[in-house]
Image 1 (cartoon, helix red, strand yellow):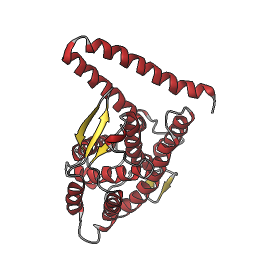
Image 2: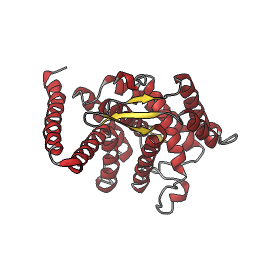
Image 3: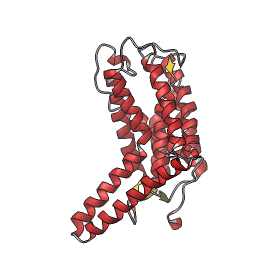
Image 4: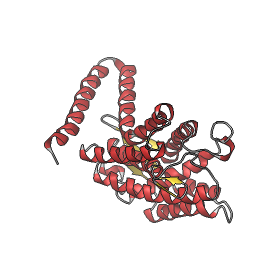
Amino acid sequence: MPTETISLRAGLRARFTYWRDRSGAWAARHGQLAAGLHEFVVFGIKQAWACLFGGLMVALLIGTHFWYPANAPIARYDALTIAAVIIQIALLWLRLETWDEAKVILMFHVAGTGMEVFKTAVGSWIYPEASVLRIGGVPLFTGFMYASVGSYIARAWREFDLRFSQHPPLAVTALLSLGIYANFFLHHYWWDLRYVLMALIAVAFRRCWIHFRIDRVHRRMPFLLGFTLVALFIWLAENIGTFTRTWLYPNQLQGWEMVSIAKLGAWFLLTIMSYVMVTLVNPPRPVSDA
């Protein structure tokens, strides 16, 4: 790997650390309000960095919707697929993403594409534009949309030095994850068990806390609250996806309307499944390791 790529990541990290320490020292001298504002800004910067892959994908959806030429020789969906691959290669080449994070993205790409092929076949949603790079009714860039969720969790894990207390056994979370994935398919032919799965998740994680470090000390948040907030932001991103007509639900074919808030439950289940997949390459560590 060229030394320039090593210095890029190290340089960005050094610049951020220098700014954080200087601004933190200033805030500490100016009272609790300034200290709280400083921590809030640091939190926002770290969140933006964790969202890098997903943010770039959303930017591509918006940009190609408004400015991609209608008569371009490459279909919009194929351009999105090519752009996603280039972004992935660039992040690895520049070492702005680790190989462990790339493994997570690959797992999500496979799992997400498989679910998309099934869901489009049964008419849950459609991709209305033509493309060459696709499997059935699914353009290949869609796997990267699912992968961006896994990428966010993996990057946030590293940036916020996540620790956990009262975490359920990994065997339990793995079974829940398998149940979630199976229900995405089986509820078309059998009972929809999403509310049963939500109840089981609530029981399993009821005492679990996420401990995250914004600046110098670890703060904590209930696990279930944290992942409900993640699901909310995914729901907001899905509204961007449908507004840009990248994919559409049946009720949006005649004109755009917001995605039903009821979809938030499905996204919550997806975030839990995503979290469990990340733990396969990055097992949760207890607070005592902090």
